[in-house]
Length: 87
Image 1: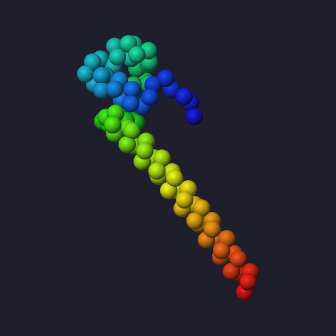
Image 2 (image 1 turned 90 degrees about the vertical axis):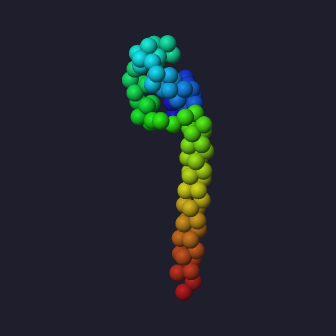
Image 3 (image 1 turned 180 degrees about the horizontal axis):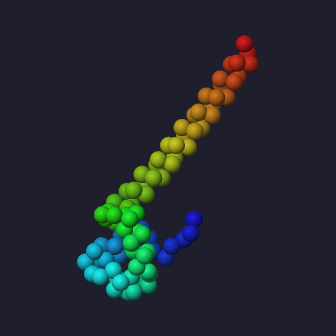
């Protein structure tokens, strides 16, 4: 994944600033394009910096849980295959 210059929290702060001032002015001050601000606004919408941290934690937990479910499904499939061969 591409490494960005700004953390998600910093980008949300920039977005909140762009809500109050002209987008072109904010983009120029932070050295990013107008389009970057609009793209990030689509992703983060009305989230605050604390919400972004919580969202990241939830995404990580969701990924971990999905991996656990996939491992369990694999174990179940293996056990079913073993029991089929015994009979």
